[in-house]
Amino acid sequence: MTDVPVDLDSHRGMAAQKATDLRRAIAVVEAHVRELRERESDLEERMMAAPSASWSEAAVKARHLLNLYAARLPGEDTRHHALVTALFDDFARLGGDD
Image (tube, rainbow, N blue to C red; front, side):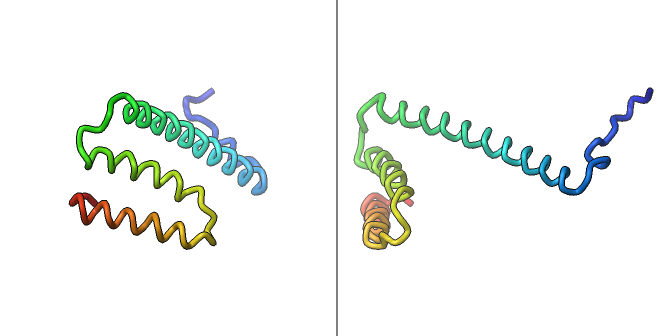
């Protein structure tokens, strides 16, 4: 018995190694998605906890909602994508935000 771990992946065939790599990658991505959803939920709870104290704070909330809306737009809906982009440009121009 040795203290050196055995690399079992090297004893598998190429197809099995690829399948294992894919399962591991999917598990990592799924964990990141769960974490992102939790962080987004926390952010939205904080946004709803108190009213905005300024127009720039309200614009931050609106920007978040517009990003959610734009992410769900079909790619061929260029008119609404352009409208969201124009509104972001307005926020930056009028509020000095980026």
